[in-house]
Amino acid sequence: MALKIKTIAVTGLKTIGILDLETPDLRRGEVLIKVHAAALCTLEQRIFQGEVKMPLPCTGGHEVSGEIALLGEGVNPKKWAIGNRVAVRLLYNCGECYYCRTGRTNMCERALKKPVREGLLIGPGGLCDYIIVETKDLFLIPESVSYEEAALTEPLACCVHSINRGNLQFGETIVIIGGGIMGQNHVMLAKRKGCRVIVSEVDANRRKLARQLGADITFNPLEHEPVEYVRSLTDGRGAECVFNTTSIPSVVPQAIEMAGKGGSVIQYSSMHPDAPTPISPQKLHGNEIILTGSISPNAEDFFVANRLINYGIIDMKPLIAKAFPFEEAQKAFEASIVPGTFRVIIKN
Image (cartoon, rainbow, N blue to C red):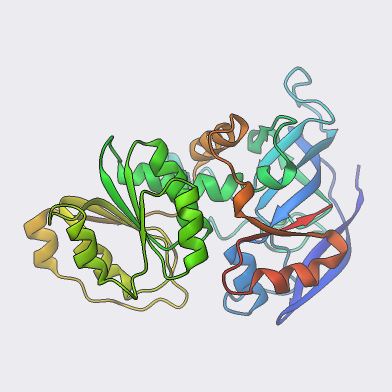
């Protein structure tokens, strides 16, 4: 049954509109979700500011939570019911390409080519009052978890994937460069892996939050030479693993220099715009440093993040900056791009 819905869409440079659409009918195995919270990720911010080019109007939103409003045919009523509170996984993977077939769905060849259902707009599609999803993309949340917290399951899942790429071990010293929301997620996860955590961050408030969330040592890289400081804390060896959560290309060589022999460097954040940066092949060769990246979570990472939030192991509340009602979407987007702001949530 088609339904009249509203969508928050980027309609021009730094311009948001609320448009009337109509959902397609539910397919077999699908459910209708009443969206209660959607967070504005860096992707939405970059589309809003024209840094990432998308056909307009475009509906963003892939950090979403809500409740089941309608069950389609073929949905198991013993597992799913109207009123179930859920976190929603909206990242697309085709299931058919080489990477999907080999279990690396986060690197799907068509990840950025999500099919557009009839009557809807291009984009992740979560910034609507109602959305249609398959039950495989739903993750139950308890009453103890707010919709705002649950909307941050996806960014936490991204960091779960990154931490797993680092293969952290008990007692290791790791460095996290950057104290934004993703850096803070890395802090919480690394501490729960039993590591000593060092955070490099210029902003005093972010350093303070990192310590509150479990960081053992924080420092300002403008006041300490970062590589020398990390080595002074590790008997001259360097860290076992370094995560760069900034979008600053020049930080990459610094991250490599911070890593000790046999260490790993994880380039977590994307670069917009990208810029080549010099590295020493001899350094990689002689020290057996692993230099790799981390992009997007797979379904398993999302499931892990869902449990971490549901069980109270990770607290997302400190990472929520502000919440705006659906009707104030323009204000929400404007607030989200203020430097230093953590996640802005749109509620409905």
